[in-house]
Image (cartoon, rainbow, N blue to C red; front, side, top):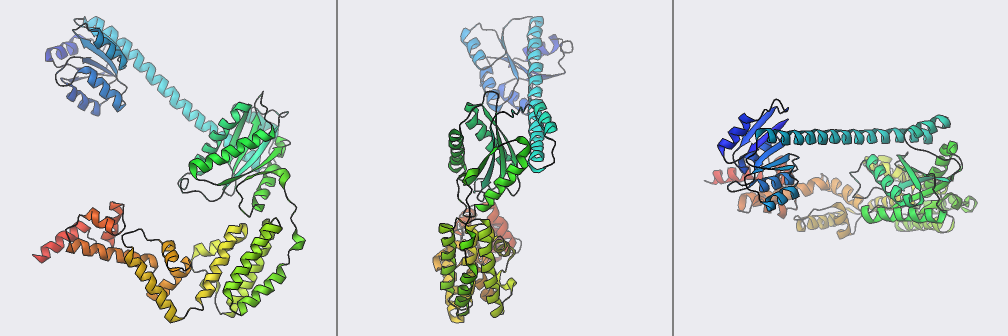
Length: 535
């Protein structure tokens, strides 16, 4: 254990060092400082467990030093030494959290007793801190064990329920089979920008905390775990005296949904079903997953199991619709084709209570007609979907109406490209060049250019690469660095200002990019070299 002695009188410090039996009272290290500044420097190197400190010192007194230590988060126990029996000093020392106040002159034995009491307090504080650390570790391990058990319970139909209940009980989770419980599946519609960097475990923790708080007044608790396909499962169960009407349950889930919208800008849907028996949890989970898959219209609502709709499969005549699309494409009426495809999709949404199966059939018929047309144009699938992300999006378009809309717009833009004359394509490229030149001081995005020149973003990328020979992103970067090089060589503008003039708010990123694009020289290095060459 370490003690720091702080006093502006050298003889007082020496007397304490030599007069106190440090070994006897279990102090292994004694540090010295003759003013508050020296004490701060010592504490930066070694945090003392106990500080024996004079109150009255030149420049900065002991009370001020104690305030500094509290602000810095040091946990040192302060024992104040003073020859003045001033009540105001004693009062302020106590307010600052000082351990004790010793009026001088005091015998070394008396000071030793105070140090021993402070030492006991330090040891107790360290023990409490260690216990708290162990408690947090236990809670973390307990939460991991509970989640593992819940995942096994949910996904393994052969789970021994009695064994599962016994293990949960050992971890403090008591389930009453005579009480009503619910299983809720929570689905996010693409992570919002605020949650992009959050791990699934952290999101599950946030879900659990919010729901626990919402259901606590009703005597209900929640078990939350990461489910499959990016979903989160929540088992809502009663405590010994728990009672909650379904209407109140629905209201609390609606509050939960609005909470995520308000705090995290995150849209989500909840699918909920009464659990008839804990043993049937895997079947209940599959039922809710099927409900979620059928929500292809991506409605952010609360769906109860008894709201399942009977879908009108017999009314859909997709073959007839496909023949119409084939005729429109054959006559190169691409705008009419896209308009009709969207109208048919929206018609299904309005009138047929569209589900996963219906959307999948719509997708298959749509892709069949597309493949027929690209074969007629002598175009391959790789030409149609030139990058992996577009191909992946196209392959999953049957999972939601929103993705299907994207696919219709994508192929519409591609087919329109095939009808663009070289002269018109050059005019479009010139418009893109002009936009880039006028906005080099901004963070130029492909979507911004597309909106300004009234073209599809994917079309712009393909057109640019085919005519200019490099990607749009590479061209924008080149133009920005050319302009930056001009400012570096021909002006005295600060480098930070130059960075902003070419659309960079991150100075470090600008320097790295400039160095990469300009022969390995940073902006400052290039400016110095250019000035030397001119001389």
